[in-house]
Length: 114
Length: 114
Image 1 (cartoon, rainbow over the protein chains, first blue to last red):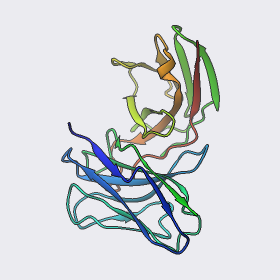
Image 2: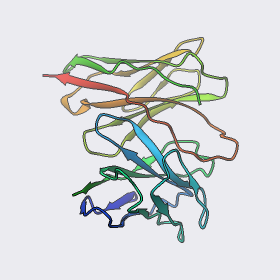
Image 3: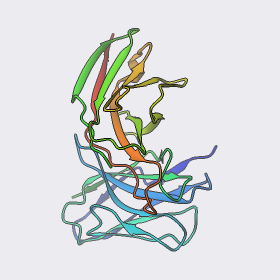
Image 4: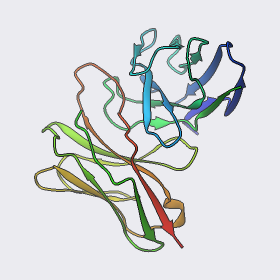
């Protein structure tokens, strides 16, 4: 079935370590996004990409990095520079480069820093 | 994008219609109203969107007032599985080249009571 796959679902990390969250989609969508969600809060945009080899910072990009080498893949690295990385991370995609239309979300990755 | 205002929480009896309000008094002429919902610890799911006419699909109905300053999402026969956080989002279909995703506020936590 078509969809978005995020892995791992749960991840624990020690302070000072970088960690990479995977996001893969087989929907042939152009645009992909990473959001962060803290308990009881809405979603905040970290990075987005409209096409391969191009990406833009969202509202809270500091301490994060991304790459878009393939249309299907948009991995997110949480670096040691991110001051409070414990959160629920959501990847999404949309068919339209302009960001119009509906977003399709993965099931999320929950990162806990020990 | 225009901002939206939603009640933080609502209760509804199982089998009844759930009516979720959203105010978007600063909406502009080219902005659509989108609704998503998020079941606990999952990715948000698209429900419906509309511009000015009422819309209906297999999940819900969307009623937009004539002045477009508010809207109501209607779940006609709520079930326990409809317990979730519901997000109302206003978004221009053509973002002028910036696929910056959708801005999700805190939404309404709808609790369906047995």
